[in-house]
Each structure stands twice: as C-alpha cells, then as structure tokens.
Length: 505
Image (cartoon, rainbow, N blue to C red; front, side):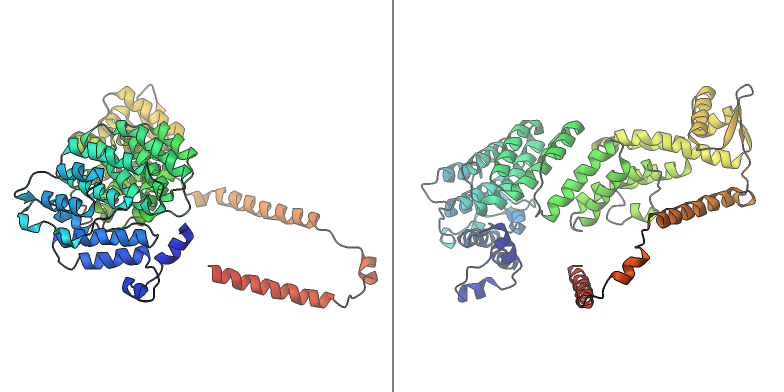
C-alpha cells in the first residue's frame, strides 16, 4: 500500500467490525482505535497486552502501519512482559529466550507505577497465538525495552536496544516503519539515560542514511530530531546547523515531530543571535504542541521567555504564573522582574540563587547575555529621572564596581542612541538632554513632505511609462465580430478562477 492510500484509509471512520463484515480489509488506524477503546475499558494488563498484539498482527495483515496503544505501559510487570514474549513469539524464534531472560525472576513484581502485583496477573498463553511476522518480534523488543527503561536497568536496556536496532536493519517493510521509529527513539533515550549519548550518534547517522534510501518518511523525521538532540546535548551547534541545512525533510510529517524540529531549530537560532527567528520557531513549537505534553510546553516557554527578553520585550505576568507551571517558572519570573526594573543587583542575585536550574535547562549562556539589557534598561530610567547625575551615583544605582565602568557603559549607550545625554569627563557627570515636544518642531512637517514627494515621484514615473496608441489606429481597427465573445469568455474564466480560489481557501 502506498503512503497516499494509507492516508485515505486513515481518514475512514468505519469501525473495524463493519469492514470485516463487508470483506474489506480494515485500515490500520481503525484497528488501532478499536484496540485503544477496548484496552481502556478497565481490563488488567494481561488482556491489554494480548489485544495490543492482536492489533499489531491485524495491521500487518491489512498492509497498513503497525500501531499499538501505550496505555498498558503503566501496568508492566516482569512476569506479564515475560509471559507476553513467550506467548507471542514462536518457539523457533531466536529472540524468544533472550527477551524472556531479561524480564527478571518470578515472584512479587513491581509495575511502572511502583505497586506490587502477584503472579496471578500473568498472561494466559491461550489468549495469544504465536505470530511469525517480524513486526511482532520488533513489538516484543519494544515492550521489553520500555519495561527495562522504567525499571532503570541500564545495562540490559542498552543491550536490548542494540539487538532491536540490529534486527530492524535486516528488513525493509513499510508496515514496520512506525515500530522502527519508536525503537530508534528509545535507543537514543537509553543511551542518554544510562550511557553516553555520543556513542549512539554513529548508529543514528547510519540509520538515517538507510531510512532515506528506503523512503522511510517517519523514520527520517524521527532520526533527524534525534540527531539534532544529540548535537545540542553536547552544544555542537555548528554541526547541528550543518545537518539541518543538508537534510531533506519529508512532506507528510507528524505534528509531534514538527514541534520537536521547531523547538531544536529555535534553540540553534537563539545561540546564533538570530533572536527573531528563534522566537518564531519556539512559539510555533509551543502553540502546536498538545496540551497533554506539559513538560515539552514548559521547556518551550522557558526558552521563549529568555529570547523575548533578549529582543527587548518583557513577558506578561500571566504567562509566567500559569497554575501548572508556576513553580517551575519562578526563577524566570524573578529574572523578568529584574530586567523590567533594570536592577542589576536583583539580576545577579537571581542568577546566583537559581544558577543550578539555569544550567540544567541549558540557558545559562543566554542569561549571561541579558546583563547588557538590564544595564541599558536601568540607565534609561536614570536618564529619564535625572537631568544631571554624577557617574559615581550611576555606578551605585546600576550596581557597577567602579566609576570607570559606569563611564564606559554610559558612553556606549550614548553612541548606540539608547540615551540622549552628554558626559563631562572632567567633572565625571552625565547631563541628560531635555526632552522636547517633537510636534513643536518642523520634524513632522519634514516627514510628511518626504512622503508626499515620494508619492508624486511615483505618479510621475507611472505617467511617463504609459504608452498610447496613435489616433489613426483607432479608426482603422474594425470591430471584429468575435471580440465581444472573447471578452465574455475572459470574464467567465476570471469568475471561474475566483470560485476555484474560494474553494481552495
């Protein structure tokens, strides 16, 4: 099935049971939705895992993408996962014993929520028939890998992730693309949590090359985001920008991958001092992200706050006092207050108090650039309030260490046009120029004259560019019988084009 046909199937709202009654193969999305509904009816983990396995098998048989529900992950136990692997994989499968051995010993088991469960929750082998599809084997790898990550068994998780990736490389099946993308994600996550993330970079680059050659669109967009995250983790912004400029992203992209790509691109632009583009990309990622992704939206909001302050904007109070994010945004709220007031002492206090938080958020290098904004804001307030002030007082109010520092800061602000003042270097005094009413001068009249002159010049140039036919040509030209029909056809075509445009929008 082609990608276009799969998209058409995804838009169908016909239930899977109706499709089977009419001898039409059910779509992958209809099967996944049916499994999602049944898996959330309150059944135990064994029934949910069994239904997920059946959904994957039906999706492969329908020539669609293998999809599954992740709601059962919270109920994973060692015995449940082990019984699932042994039930779903045939005995001749080489991965059956290896995955079963990694699920731990029997006895009281701990779920991902941290609660204990007895052996009675184990899956009944009769509920699932062994499946020889490679998608089912990859799904078993994925279930075991998620269980090992939740249990924080780093060594086993790393080995399981490598084996899953090696197994996926042996196949080129469209029905495996979604499962493979999920395995790639957890492969990178495993190295980030339990190993060195840079160790996964070579493998991710090779996987992206294979995905591009095999026209695996979801694999390409997933691997590009994983590589960008890998580079940004080690602050390799130049390599990340080179990768972004050379890859070709597929046209049909998921909203989740779009948000992640915009977020990473916004971070790259912020470090490259392109704050306007950084704000645009980060805002796009924040607005498109689903409301349930609170952690991702929080990270985007932190970066948006710093980038806006670097642009000279002050975020509103309500943006930083949202009920679900208020505690995490408290350090950034203090920074906004210091920048708004131009208080360098409060800014330094906030950076020292919450320095560990800023370092963990990887924003400490951008926050260092805010110091100039704080000084500029404070100096503007001083210039407005005082007509004459000594540089020693300026240094005291701005929290600078010496008069020489204050003199250089004021001189730079005057040169940049941020303050309208002059410095008496001999007396070490700054004189603020009086603010005059611009409408009492001829400046508005001069600006208005420039605009009128521009409009008149444009009109004169347009008149000179016009060409008129000679008067004799009008008399000699006969009234062609088909001219009026041509005009009618042209007007009808214009109306038709207008209708098409309206339907398009």
